[in-house]
Length: 368
Image (tube, rainbow, N blue to C red; front, side):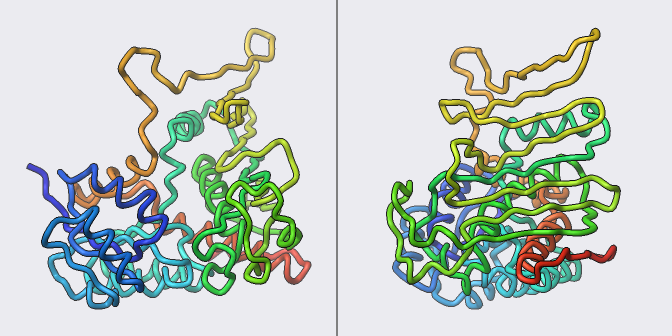
């Protein structure tokens, strides 16, 4: 029988209720949620009642939760501002940590987390669940097998037509550190770097835009308060890697375009290319392209089973993320998303903001 982990939840808001707690509840053979913490005690109590057992504890102060030596792992699901300090405290308390994306609001805070994980010997992973989509896994395998050859150009896509999040603190720069870039751009960049297996950025040139705060008509999630909207709605960047490869990053919560695509990547190699496209029914179409038999060839791998009653790739990526995370703790293996990889993502995001503010290209040191 596998070890069963005791899990503490720190932050019982939207991402906890939408992704983490429902996924963990389906994995009760691997772990159980025994403690819930939130600055709003009613939220912690509600989470405990829905996802804990009769002995589940609730807390208002996360430091009190960390004193419980029976807790093996915590999920840090708070606004971005608090990711670093809570994660460092949890690691120092001897807990493994799953922290929601982004790793932190800046690279200095992310580096503190990385150092604390290395010093404690505990595992630290960041919530980039889009790696677990079946099309992402297929592209990664194609890249790893060399089917695309040297990948020298890529595009990271995180574009919504009108999808500004109007709940929580997404539009609060102090608590989140930024807007669309740090919220959804981070997913697209993580996915692209992971597929390329290239984590050595050399320079970043970026622009951010604050254009849409007063233009809420047609927003998918309804209206917002313009007075409380002090983050960017769009950001674009050109990233040059040490080996000469380049990445174009596009992200927006509200871009007037008919070509919206979120958490997608396009990869261009010497031997072939791979592109994630959005079909009219909003599902993802994966297209590989190459040349064979003297002809240009495109093909679409079937990432869904056609066997009746077998769902195949329809597993929720949040569930797969949680399953892999708990299993890597139990079996002492490396998580799919490492702290070192997430740190590089944060460093690049920070450089985009720096470049936009100064109007200059940001040169990144070799020792990130």
